[in-house]
Amino acid sequence: MFFLLDIQANESEYTLPLVIQGLGAGMLMTPTIVFAIAAVPHRLGTTAAGVCLFVRCLGFMVSIALINFFELFSKSKHYNIFQEQVSRTNLVATQTVVKQTHIFTAKGIKNAQAGKLAHQLIIHSANTQGQVRFIMDYYQSIVLCYSLRSRSLRFYLISTKRFFTCGPISRLHFKQKAAG
Image (cartoon, rainbow, N blue to C red; front, side, top):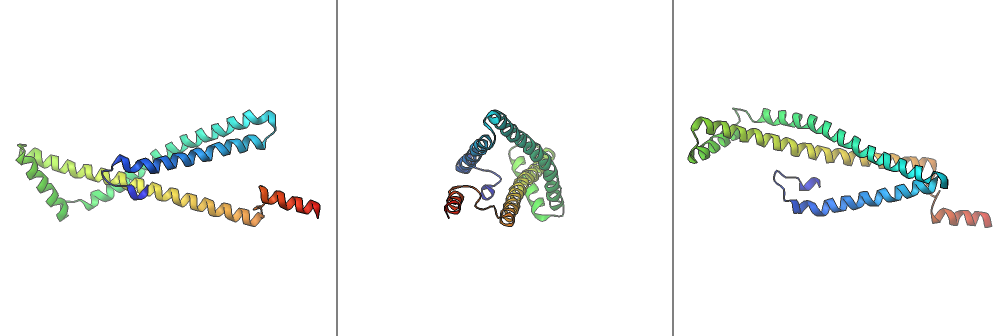
């Protein structure tokens, strides 16, 4: 998804990555609930399923709240950075404003109003760039969190020697121990 980010995107480019992301989330949620139900006594199965669904919904709500908070924070940060870059002394910005002003005046808009519209286009571009930069920062932070989490989980499994505590390999190991 990170490499698909652009100022103007074609929605068909996002279909396959979003389908894969949805399938991944769906394949993760069902085994989690089944594991929770199987890990508790039969009489607590419905409670375990309810707790799993509650935690899942709570996680979604908290993640939406955090995304909105960091979006506002990050967009304003990137917007301020772009505003600093786009100043009257910036030759490219000045040429863009002049070019857009000429385009607007050629369409019959008064010169003063055309200048204001050209400046609004620059501000709109800074807002768009701020949004794109926020999304890029978001995906980078998600990758960082997942990589740190997987490393800490791997370290925990290695340090506690819990690699073969479940599954067919451990059953075979336990059967061989019992027989031998």
